[in-house]
Length: 479
Image (cartoon, rainbow, N blue to C red):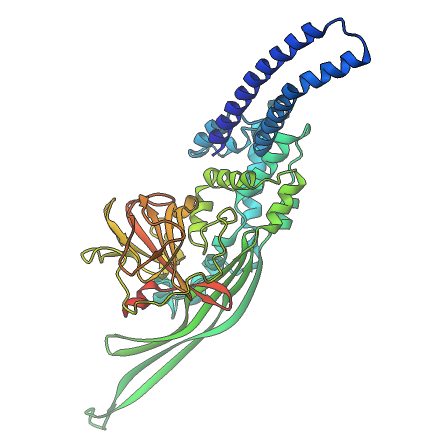
């Protein structure tokens, strides 16, 4: 994005220079003709003759200034793209690459600053029960549920909402790019962006039932008696999180399951994560950027993009958070109902009938890479690049195109009180503003955005109290 903007600005600048030279030449010729006219009338005529050429010059200068101002936040960073490539490796210090050379600190000082970012990012765990202590407390009775991510530690619940180190680093990067003195303020920035957590305490139970024989005096079994033993533990469930990206509200429901282990009947009641709503609000972050004169929409998007490229885990956490990142530049309200038509009543599978293999289900799961519990807001369906993608129901296409670095190319279909999302597409075929029928072709499977391979990420979000809330897409297919 930065490079495209820079190229555009250079093209306009060159055009302005050319226009300026031509205009100046014409003005010069007029000046030569009028040299010697020293009277007031002559000066007036000179100005009148030059005015038609001065106006284009002035407009060209303003045009260049306007375009350049979109990138002023990084105008001192000619090597930014090179820094981004370095940042994809092991050297996190590349985040400081765009700071004026004269302001750069020593390597040791920069590494100490990076350590401070990590310390602040992780400091939210200081107020929580550690995962190690949680697992130890649950190990005797609830170890199976912990292993299956049915019971989750406080740290694992909060982890996706930590302030990323790269956000703190990029804020300090801005101060070093725009100011004559580099004064990093990580503690001050973190205090402004620190998440606010709301919890509820619930009780989980496990009841073990077995039959115990009753013996007579001779040692013969004459009867059986049912024995039970119940175990209770208290856990905290994360209800709402206020972050620099918005307000997240989790939905938990009690769930009871029964299974058998040998002669034991085991019944466990726990709280299942079933959905989440999100109200996007970047006010706290954008107010900070405003302090450094970062006010343009494109600058904001560029700032968040750079933070994600410096810190891949930030993108990954965004993928685990409803919305997939900043949508302020999309010009659509995802919490609004657009489709006023009628539904077909029969839900269409989003891929060809032969593509039914689900590589990742909805809900809580053990992350395949991080090996710890994480939320998954949709289902991932296996499909080769170019496989047809269909609308699940009648609706209105409210978005088709690039949907950020998490979801990549995507199509969003409004069906009235719910919306369906089709993400990581190689190609979008549907056109925003057009109505579709259930089963209409809307795109092609791909691997764009934050994706490890070709598949369709399929989400459904229902409007609840004016806010989008994720639901299991498979519930629309009788599962």
